Amino acid sequence: MHINIVTLFPEMFSAITDFGITSKAGKQGLIELDYFNPREFATDRHRTVDDKPYGGGPGMLMKTGPLVAAINAARKGLRDKGRGSEAKVAYLSPQGRVLDQAGVFELASRESIILLCGRYQGIDQRVIDQEVDEEWSVGNFVLSGGELAAMTLIDTVTRLQPGAVGDKDSVNEDSFSNGLLHWPEYTKPQVFNNQDVPNVLLSGDHEAIREWRLQQSLVATREKRPELISKEILDQKE
Ligand SMILES: C[S@@+](CC[C@H](N)C(=O)[O-])C[C@H]1O[C@@H](n2cnc3c(N)ncnc32)[C@H](O)[C@@H]1O
Image 1 (cartoon, helix red, strand yellow):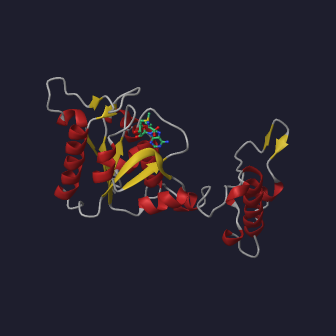
Image 2: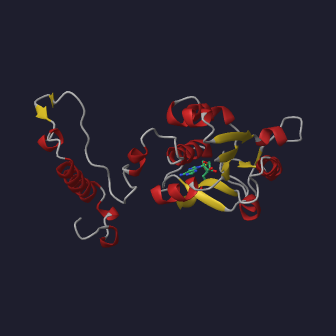
């Protein structure tokens, strides 16, 4: 998957390119990230990328010119790699569709995407109106910039690229993948501070373990996130 990122702070992305599954996926060519910094497209002597909002008020906004030039360069970058036609421009925004695992599955199936990271008080509405195809939020709170949100999105879609996670069953069993939270897990030692690993996990009875895990998933979801449970996602047995 090709991900072109419009950001004033490309260096921040080393948090995902240098560590863990996302780093490995980059080296395997499962994800490819390219950066387009609006500052490099600013034409004045000071390379200005922000300005005051019309109508007054606190804070600054990202200027239209350098931002649109960076988006166009990101589009061209994908076109040059033969990936341009279907790529959507996604603005990371607290006003967007809240990212959930269903959204992650949807995004992960695409060949390419352009992620637009806002800074300051955000971006000029006309850039949203004219250039942005969709808005994604990582939650109902406000970050200082879109980079952490973009990294969250990239991490989540990378996990779903075939071959990114060693055992593909582990991503299919992750919380939310089947609409439920994950069951509790245990590793060695068998007894920790007088608490035993549940017996069934030591039984070697795979059917009993599968049933116990499903039951625990249902209990965890009912107790921690009851709003996730709807009749439609449960089968008769559940
Ligand atoms: C300080 S925020 C701007 C918030 C904006 N004034 C508002 O109230 O909607 C700066 C940038 O951070 C990013 N951002 C903030 N919260 C976010 C969230 N929950 N999800 C995704 N991006 C977010 C957006 O790119 C935004 O342009």
